[in-house]
Length: 449
Length: 127
Image (cartoon, rainbow over all chains, first blue to last red; front, side):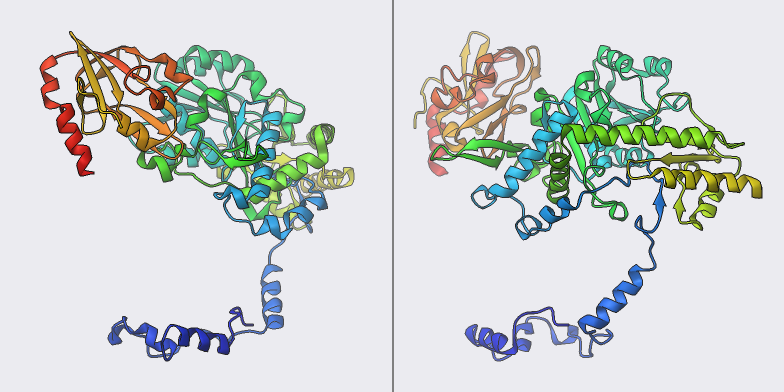
């Protein structure tokens, strides 16, 4: 299959135009001794049909959520994506659009990003949102960096129930120049308020809190906010965007920065990426915000238009003085989130959240009725929960996979003390039959022993 | 372009006016013209200790960002708070309304290290 559209005739014309007899003449600057004499050791080219068959065969070695019932969570969820999302995403005007640095030719892209930012503000109730970040993990790391720059302090306190992969990324970003990251050991799966009191000091730039946390539990944000702000530190809240439809928002709690993973909003699991980091904060932090910002303005004729603003924050202008090296965003993923939110609206999103809440609690109730299975933590949860299993969680997962069920996440991979702990997530997509099927198969494990 | 004769200048285009031991600092007409519309200025806090020719703040125009260098060593005793909402004053009136900070000078003789209006004009001609 030929990928290069130039015919031999086209090539001949081009070579003639530049006054060269053949392609080989262009290679003259490369010393003879360095030029490859043999043919490249590659297999013969395949026809389109042969190629399609080969790649399809390879991809079929994977299984995905079309054939498996997924109860996986921990930051990426199997939520329903209306087909309209793809219809808009795959329009070539959006799909092939490049970076909107030239506003005169990018009004469509810029407007869609402006709408995305506006919706994020409504959802989080924060004053300003940027055009998005790579993913939740890097958004958390950037929030940490912002807090260091803003306060001039050198220590970041982190909740021990923050998503462990976000914590890893945060550490990677902050491993320089005397910065300290302290993880606080959780108590019964959530932030230990007494410990937080002890560790907060005049050295603390911020406290990073996730709610619902990695174990699905709700944190006592109101009390935590008071403590953090009394110490003069910033409160960074990591949240699940779906949960914000029914839970109190970071804006309501008075958080300084709200970040998280926007994948649940109209984005597929994509084998782990591309994902969608969101970043929103208070107005007074706008000049320290990383990433792109789209603003509304008027052109020379007074017509409304959109443009990238405050670009002097970004590294291509501020260079080594920029607080972040990020000068990009996840435009297509943000568009998917925007379309999703537009379609569902406030009431639709609320319904999604309520279904997640109800279904996860239904599942938890049924599972804990099985002998040997119980809830590990006592705090209220949103759409995922940790089950203590009678046999190692890894065994449960392996056995249930044979029945085409992805039972959950084995938490021992993050903490060896959590050997019999399974993180189960239930979204609005899971039917009663699917949940009952999970329960029956778990029950079946006990009978086998 | 106006270069005032009664002021001293730094190579980085800041001007300074000394009154007993208080120095008023700003950027000159050349600098504001080069930067274009100034949109924001990051000022030090009152009480901050500055060193001659060390950066004390950042000035932002629409497409460029520049550091501000202190012409003298001393302590910041006042900042022009009007600039918070009207950074453009620096463009309109760089030598008066657009003043940036006031410093209590440690050693007035330090001004000898700076350029006179004549020397500064020569520097600009070379650009």
